[in-house]
Length: 598
Image (tube, rainbow, N blue to C red):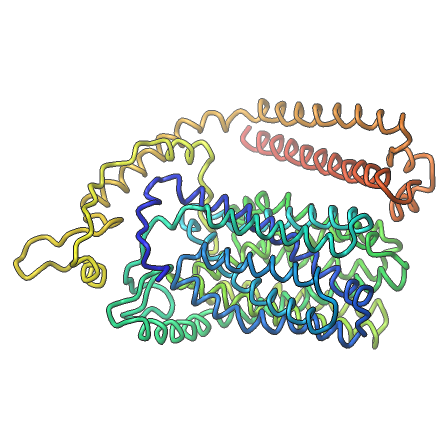
């Protein structure tokens, strides 16, 4: 069984970090196709296959239904087996789904591809989040990093897909997505195994004797008993997480409703095409990818419940502001506010679920993902009824009221689970690097003997003759484990002490940030001058032509390579503006902090 493979390959202290990094890269490569599919599948189904609106709805429902059903099962598999194998299987199924869409010639083939994609998404995302949670105890910023990776993959895929779809068509985009998913599977398979092999531990929701820990091996009762205990553990986790799951359904209902309302409003009221709608959503996605880790600093400073309340008010202000937004440019600016709110909320939700799930993080993430999808389904139905049956202003204010309800429901759910309101700060990069460079203490593992399975099943027991039991690979005695922990703590403290003086030099850091922005601006200026000389500068069109029309519809290039170059220049303008805003905010924060210390 996969879960029984020895874990001796990951004894290096750098292995968990490498495992996380490759998982983050895989998340970026797969979330791009995931988000792009949601956007272009209805268009492709109608344009390429000639499906009716009802058949398009069935296509989307097939994927969602299979995903809802499969995600709790994926959670059990992520706790029983090596998680990177579960996630890689999901990525391969995602690739197969994309290839199925590219080859589909009728509705039945499209439905089959959607079913495969639903199962693949369940296996992939539940296992990825379970892998990321493995370092949560030592680094509270792991889930903000995951969200940043996902959103980066999302907006990069959106830009590439929207720019290239006119050149390579829907089929070419699907094949490109399949290749990205296969690359993600390769990254997951090349990641190190989890450092600590599973042992029978009593902690965690739903823990029971005879069950396995995360990624564990079967207990001596046999695989059948383990499977039964796994299902029982899934129910126990669901009952423990019930308050948070209800809160997740509420917040996801609000997010899905406002997103669909905005999409329909842009298409019907402003007559925007697909690529133009994508450009409206693009600034918010970039804001989420850039701000997720930085907002975690405020979570550490002010606590989870306060940030959740602030994020709910910010998102509600966005929804209410939509009622009077005069044009898509204002809507894009408001969408940034919503993106910042969700960049704070989503990592908090995932961290709370992981902490409250204990040893059964896979199961916890499985039911959490199902709650997300259930909320998305309810939100889509609610948005449709609001848009058709109510005035636009009433629809926006109703969505804002639902979001404000989350300001009460979500913080109460966090408190009811008993998790810490203020997470520990993530380790400083210098301290983490120093700890990884520290020499590994001698553990002296012995070859595994015939009695190793019994030793795993009954840790701490001794043979009948009173001698010490042999230590399986990866296990340490209490004394050696204590010495190793003390050595690592000392190395981390020494590294933190060495890095402390560097943190007290904000002027130097500010100057470095400004130099980086200056270099970026110089390169941007040189390239823009060259583009102006050859007549491919979007920035020049923005200045010399109708500004709003150029923002929404692009410059003078209609198609071909020239349009790709001009769109690339347009994207670079937004990237530079974002870089400048981030640098300004960082410098302002340093100045405020310095004044406070003075």
